[in-house]
Amino acid sequence: LATVNDILDLRKIENESLSLVRATVPFGRLVSRSLESLMVRTQQKGVELIINPGETSLFSDCDPRRMERVILNIVGNAVKFTPEEGRILVNVTRDMTNQGCIRFEVRDTGIGIPPEALERVTQRYFTVGNQPGGSGLGLAIVKEIVALHGGSIGIQSPVPGEDGGTLVTVCLPSVAPPVILVAEADEKIGSQIGEQLTKAGYQVIRSNEDEDVGQLGEL
Image (cartoon, rainbow, N blue to C red; front, side):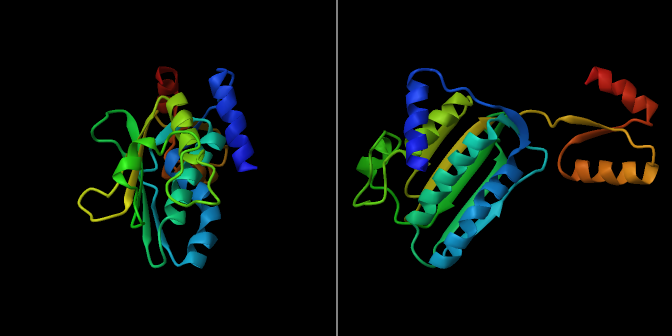
């Protein structure tokens, strides 16, 4: 089903008919929730999966369903090509080299990618070695979806400073955290709601704070 969806989306991209259903989402949380489905698989294989969701204030204006596919395709590849007792490290950080961007990194201790294949792994239907279960579409659709979001993808193998493994980096534009107005007559409940939203990375304004409500118009 995933392969069929990839083919259909690639055809829509060719026809310029693929529309993104965007939402402003906390990117680190999107990554963590997307990878929950891979936890059992990594445990069964004996691979350690470490997820660092980064700052809660890192938000992206993206299509969550299609961005989840990007995340699963990249990390799924890392799981597939990382042997038992290997490790996969997923990081979400603020991109220090590109202001206003989120950096999503997947670093593994797997078998790596041959140098001659490195520039071709994002081409459609291209597979490395003997992969009876691979369609060669995973990274191709990743590249296209990331480009539609105004981002970029980079692949390095071996991992810089290491003898092996692969490092996949996706850079996406970031947006300011949404502003949420909390209107609650009970001050205690309103404070609790505000605290939870603030911890989740949102900007919070209380309705009973006249000064802050005035700032809402400015935001």
